[in-house]
Image 1 (spheres, rainbow, N blue to C red):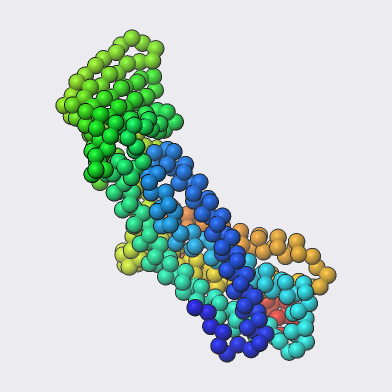
Image 2 (image 1 turned 135 degrees about the horizontal axis):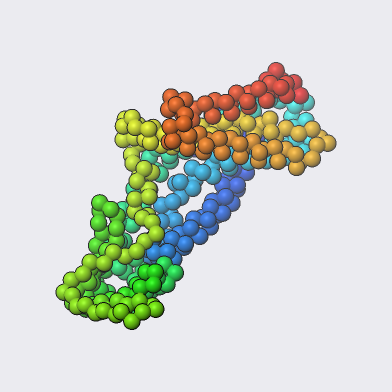
Length: 363
């Protein structure tokens, strides 16, 4: 993946310093982001929006999106950290005394940046949409499979903070057919008790609504503070299971193929295409930006440069997010897009390097 050919000894030393730091930072950030994704999925499972049986599968399918988020940051941190250590340990001073110029950092830098950016481009344009599509398909299949949804025979399942209680005596081998179903549903000051001999799941593909069909049962309804109770027998009843939001349709844009959104010409698709290639461009810009940020005189402490680097990263990334929202709302011309953010950050980086006198080999 990474090419060390045609690098001199010092360039190979810097390259390995960056690469090892990049791998270490990526692992740490990946563990943190997996923890965040795990917490979000547990919240969705508790709310009845995601099946518990798909927890680890969905975490795995979320990894392309997570990597697209953390890899540019890992590049930024690895270059700052690697060069910063060389400055603090006076190794850079020795290297410069040996004739090592700033421009010689570009070859090992781009030997690392170009493969990473190519990987991010493939990740954003192909892998992440396929993972999003697979996620939607898994959720669609799970809506039809009671066992995968997490229903266990002989167990009371409390959903939506107690508003819905579901009990199933047994689940047949097909994973959809339920036997002896009990449902307690609370809505405002009303309460319904459903019982049926048989039931099964089905999904409305048009609305994404999740339904439970009950056969040969009865429903009892009454008020918490009144005595107006009623009972009704039925041979079949379709009950829509309450949900706070639909996870099935939430990733519709993310699951579209890149070729489809590139040629569609709509506002949403054009913004989505630019957003998918943004991590690849950001990795290159942040890698270059880290070089002037990592430079520190011998007597300068670490805190100032670290704080400045965090501030620069936050401004860059937040500007991308704000421009994306402006484009989607129509507050910014689509022709400008997100390109100007990357170009402006690159120009500021080059000006920063020029100001420090590095473009002419000083310092």
